[in-house]
Length: 254
Image (cartoon, rainbow, N blue to C red; front, side):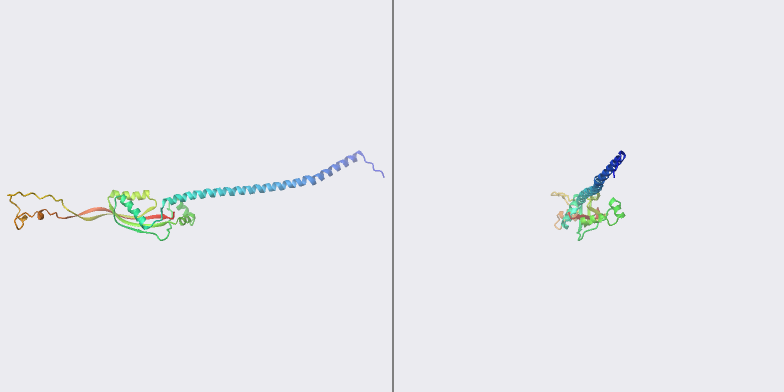
């Protein structure tokens, strides 16, 4: 049996062979390359997502570091406003020096030292105070507990000039942020003062002169100079300004 292959059959066979070659090439080369390419794209996408996640974490770490630094600076500034914890002698010496610098006459001074830490609330109109009202129990109370503030209470009665008293109150309010005036009572009091009159020398009686005042003669007929010129104490009421004031001294464990 003879097969006759025409030119048309040769062309068909050629196309068929080329198709099979392309199909085999596609199955063995292009399809694995496409799958590999898709896998690489997925891995690249996952790597980019992981990189973005790492960048976010790094950015968060930088933000946390910055916030920690800012908090440390803020805490250092807060600590600088308060006095270190001291004994009653130190607080008494500090208040006494402050009063004497304003020319005060100290009538009484009482210092009560704290036994436990105090819980100090924010000023209600401050930013932290408004935030604490919106979100109660936030980190502001934790900061207060971390600082461990102690409050020493001082009560004293002083006397002095009215300008010196005003200067004392203004000085504490403006330049002593860790001292809070809790109460103040201003009064004008009268105190009895014994004054001695000015003594002048008695007149000299020359020999031969007669003494006109018979009451000034003693039993021997001589002048009793001590009886005439002895000074008599005089009691007078002197008005003075008295200030009864109470402080709170804030201390912390620096």
